[in-house]
Image (tube, rainbow, N blue to C red; front, side, top):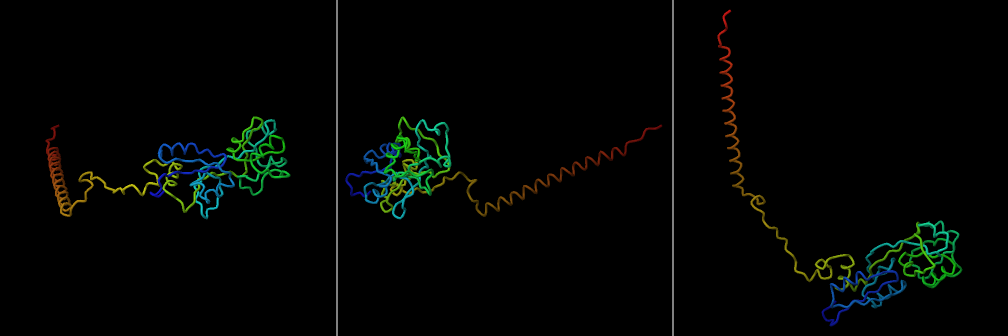
Length: 273
């Protein structure tokens, strides 16, 4: 944000099923002087709210048009099928898409899954919202396939859900207008990505540049001078020669001793018979 703003604030939108409370708590700890306002928006309106300036950033579900919006994928949601508690599928833990072939599967207009072709048989009419579709499942009209977070959000005592395999999964992302990547947006990106206070991208340009100074650890890491190298080489050669001379003297001494011993043995008088 620019310094001309007297009272900076941050507006965060989120779609149903997303729980931003963890990130909001960290924001309030790190930036207590910058109020954060939460705005719940429908999945269909999330991108429009960002483009119209109604929010600084938003948690939404992909895909999103990245022509003018930036997005950071955060996590993938499990896909489930919502069924009545007395349905035969309630006896198993996981259901395949093929097992829904003979079932009426509701496909609401605010569906968040990127279907090539929804499973099951289509209903006569598409419900307007996921909440409407849940009511129809409770009435025995059909089944509903949604991300697990939405199944929990619209929980009813007479309904349950089971994991559904071989179907698309929903991905939640943090998105914001690319041309409005403010310092506060950068701060929130850092929070969502788990950065510490000192490593937050939003304030990196305000911190003085650190100079990489490596402390000297002694003469072992210093480059020796040319004279020193020559001196060392000369010293090593002299030492080597000295050791070689000593070795030679030792060998000569040993040889003399050995020769003397052998000579004495050959000169020993024989016993008389």
